[in-house]
Length: 283
Length: 265
Image (tube, rainbow over all chains, first blue to last red; front, side, top):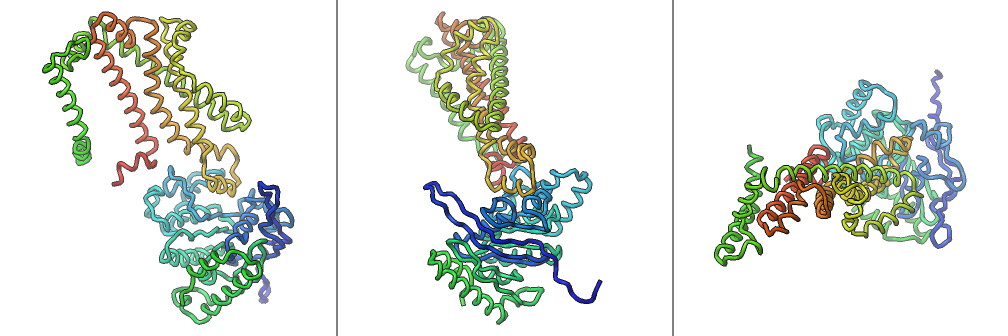
């Protein structure tokens, strides 16, 4: 209760994290190596880098969907495995991964069906989540009746039903057109501000990373390493004006140069960087 | 009402072709004076059907017997196929044993075993026919259900993993719903096979009131109009069984592309 502002508690701590895969040829491939990173509660952190930089692997390590070869992942003071069992995670993938045999509300309800929560409580929570992503009117629709952006909003609602402390998003808007993507960016920021959740967001779009994040973690490929962490000090709430501000352009440039530096050193595939740029700023 | 009209318009060409085909058949037989034992006219087949519906060859009671045999075989084969598919999906080692054996067994023309099934279960017993039916139905159901249970999107499994869902929850919430359309596909294939099994089983002996027996007996006395009439009834029975399963798809899996494709233009 002191007037002094204490730093927000740690949600994720990665220490000396390394992940290697055994290739069929017998060689080992290092996906990520020497990763040290700390995320505080309520942060919005983007992981950006060329294809093969291990950003998705890093996300999956945090979410205990794959095991590290060395180092440790601590989430809410627990091992990642325990955090997963405690349902501390919400996951959103590039594909919405909705179950086509379930309606929108049934999809959102699915995580709660794995708990002992009573029916009334479940239904209330589902309504709340659908209201959050503004899909109340589509509760009884099946996924195939929705657009790509709407499907992804259902996936976000579903990921939040457990009230997880951390939301892991793996290129969630990579398959959407630019207009929809920008709308979804604003949507996800609104949800983030409303819920105060910690977000780890994998993307290969520089503007998206800058627009959304409090910090952008820039990675290089082969092996995947963190080359720079760029603090995004753009004021919030962010909107259309943000994308047109001078500071936004400066930060986009900074992230792009950080990416180029990492890319140069790793001498990885330039195609992916070019793609990231093509999808990003034109001017 | 609009739906009915749309359907009539949609199936109109098929109806025209069907009716036209029968008319041409009738016309050719009459014009060329083809003898009945080579190819009877549709009108003669129809007459034979009406005359032998309850009396004579008793086609209607015979159809009921055959339908029971085919239905019993279909249910038994489906249950067996489901049981093996679930067991094989659950235990990967079982997959390595069962699948190669299953595929090898499936290469055997099972109807060739009809006389043996008659020997084992008694040629007068409906169970000998059901056994052949069930053996025919088993494989497509087993392989389809197994596919449905195991070919699950890896992201779906990761999603369930992120919810800390156990194997049973994954089975109930993901694998079984995913397998349902596959099961119904297997069942549709199974309807035809179950009838083939029953009729072929009857060819090799059994009670005379059964469609396979009607075919054999009438052909042996050169009453080919009756033979054709019996074949017609077998075909209609098969179509009805198929339509029942296809209709249940509309109720059970309205979300599936194969079903909803007809509703969403």
